[in-house]
Length: 530
Image 1 (cartoon, helix red, strand yellow):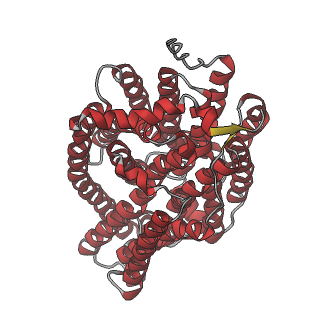
Image 2 (cartoon, rainbow, N blue to C red):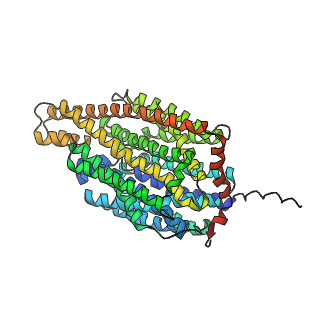
């Protein structure tokens, strides 16, 4: 009986694929940059648009929530219609929404523009990751490609404040959005020639009810949390949170019953998939919640101009890049779970440093650097675990889950941790409000630090200075409380992640099987033209 010929190794990527990867780094950088770029613009934006406390939080995090709510939908649409088509369509909408945001004349208009940006941005990440999966069939090359792509995300998040600082030195706050236009043009011109088109051969009809439910779940919960932080436990807040949770439960039950679900919840039975996906939510919460506070601290507490504040945040970007390269070289010698768990433990040094913040940039920047460096292994390796655990025909949905974790976590970090910090700030300032501050100004000052500094400018010299100092002290106190919240979350993340390294080998083989199957992705996906 003739023996079967040895299996042919998967084709290795060439110049075209690596060039396409460089182009795909553009949406990765822009998606994350647009989640952080407004941090430095908040003071000037607040003076021009005069948003309320809740509006200010919505301006910063409506983008992230729309991204998180629409990621799974766009990933599933990519499996059905073609990932390259979805990528380029999203790029057009994103560019138009960026121009709309730059021209905003009110807080409501800017919130709407950011929401449209978020919806469009949600198409970029899952489409990019799915295209990478099909361009890089060799396992080692694919791992390196995903690591480079994730570094683009981290670079975008870290560069947002720096780029924003440079632009704000010479232009108005809306200029931070116009950077999107020339870079997206490059993607639209080069993408059709460099990137292949693939769609799933097993796709079914899109479930519009599930799409609506996936959007309403996070938005209702976050609305309730924001209202809770601003007004305390009232019927509106509790009803919104309860409604969001009920919709979420109904969404999961609906996915289990459908033959072609929007989100394949059965994937969460794979330990590597479940722990990595949930862990991405926690990591996103910690990083974006901290970035929001540190950016405001450097400008509003320490008084740095935008350019200087952006430069102080540059070490965070550098540390993340260095650690990502180091993790890529160590991944072949140590299990990913060990590297991710060790990084989370190391990241605990960040909050410890943040508790020492004392009107100096040293501890606030050091804390940010340690936190980002420690969580970089999770960002670099977690996506690979999620995507590698999924069947190739669900590549778009799996990559969407991975990105949903990071984006949803980032939005939750801004909303939940930001709301907690706002409540702590307001409570501390109320207990240390200088005598003589009118009740109306005192109420505004308790909403946000920018509002307090604006109120201080309306008061006589000495009284205004005392209010400004009390507000800065209250904000510093909120940073300390924020740091104490991070510590148990990091310890829990490290312990849960470490359990993956102790799973029997059969689990590892199960999670590797789809990855091997993915090397023959053409069998599961239909090429529809170059």
